Amino acid sequence: MLITIENIENYKKYLEKEDKAQKTISSYITDVKRIFKIIQEKFDNFIDVTEKMVKETINEIFNSKKLSASTLNRQKHGWNSFCKFIGMENFFIKKKINKTTNIRKKVIDNIDVRKMLNFYDKNYLQTTKDNEKIKYLLKILAINLGYNEGLRVSEYRNIKFSDIDTGYISILNSKHNNYREVPISEYTSKIITKLKNLYSNCAISQNDYIFMKNNGNFISNRTFQRWIKNVAINCGVKEELAKSHGLRHRFAYNFLQENKEGLVILSGLMGHKSIETTKLYLNYTLDEVKLMINKACKTARKNKLPFK
Image (cartoon, rainbow, N blue to C red):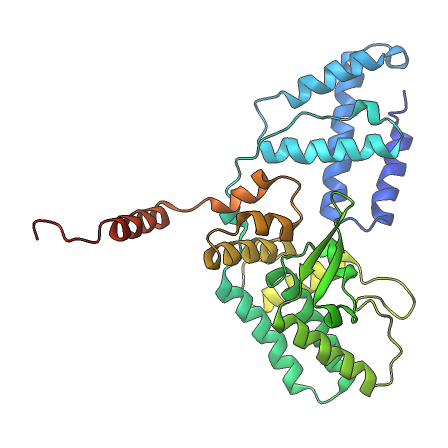
């Protein structure tokens, strides 16, 4: 068997090298160790454990009704990632775990996003140094890429200065390893253009990739998350909502509010493998459903009721 403590430790180093968030690394390692421990406890002679025995044990774990769908999905991703790392794809968990999560609880409010942007806008306007302006514009851009384009934080590094010439960002989908084209909003395009001009004014040599540093390394995902977290704290925004994915969720809700029939288009923009994932954004509140019903009734029945 290739499931050993040594391999788990090497897997941890691999995740760190891949620039995974510390919380993700911690969760994945904890979950893999938990599964490893269950297998060890179930079989006296661990060396002679067969593939069939391991698969049966894994299936028992993932058929548990005690854990939430989100927890099982996290454990599934962590386990499959570990199996891929050690070359044991035959142990993948293929079971589909349906999510019942109310995404609304993870969505940042539009007002809070504006507070965060206004904070950086104010800093940008107060500084007179171009290199300081660049620093704040990069942070403003990072927030906008989630809020206006719906990108995952791991996809920020895809954006180039030359993208404003085409009007689209070619995104390598970090989850499914395929490309999609995402249109750049006018607001984001203006930020990129301003950044380009500032770099030119400062005579700073810059790669085409906006978030690539001069040493050839990209700004890390953790740095992006820290930018968002720090501005949230300064603005009094709930820290648990001030994450790049919270901005992405807000983009999805905003898009559907303005484009009621745009579910299929949104699914493509978000890079979802299944439209079922996108449908989670249709989780309206009862008050919103009531308003929709009343609006539909009013549209369908244009004549007045026979009583007051």
